[in-house]
Image (cartoon, rainbow, N blue to C red; front, side, top):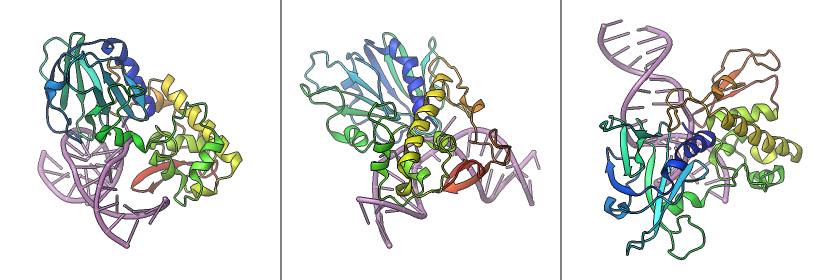
Length: 286
DNA sequence: ATGGGTACCTGTCTGC
DNA sequence: TGCAGACAGGTACCCA
């Protein structure tokens, strides 16, 4: 579900409350995608130092509280159907709430019906540079990620260099996340529409000018989605329970058979790598 | 190295 | 009404 805008909206909705919160207990429900990777007791008594985002991951570095335990934090992924929220009162966890971090600032819960999400302990060097995980699974998950789309270094030249030689369709290259992060199935279709590029175009054969347009389109679309509070197709909510509104702004996503808002042609759907792609044949070219 | 397919899991909707 | 099948925002992993 959540692509970069939804993850960032989620982050913004929890960061103030969690920053400085002291962990009192950890409760696990059904297994998520990966095991937590540490004993829950390891977390107790530590404070959440911050809530950061990298791609579609959230990273919560923990103060080590002067304990003998290793320095580290929690890496969260919302998968396809995950969302975060704070439990009200003493409500028992719902059937889809598989992780709870009880703190002195409230009880953070991950709700995730499909359980493609994850919460993973990440080690970081106690005196290492920065606060990101340095070893283990959490570090490995972050290691292959591409550039952040809002990084000033991300532009057409960067994109073109990362796509060079790749023969997969551009839509699939964007989803792979090793060139630029955060673009999922919705925003890949939307960005390609905005850039006027056919999703079937060979990634490595897109010229400099069109790469520039695509990089700009990715930033523009993600920015608009962020300002709209993300996209809520079904279950996405931020931690305040707010829906996103970008689905009303989508030009092609989930609009198969409807009129293109730009040219009046008919929006088409096709399958690429088992995922639906939406595009307008009248506005997008190879 | 790249690319294709499979797998994980559950809910919802469509069509027969 | 029941039921099978398709499909859903992600991505690691295995094999060619």
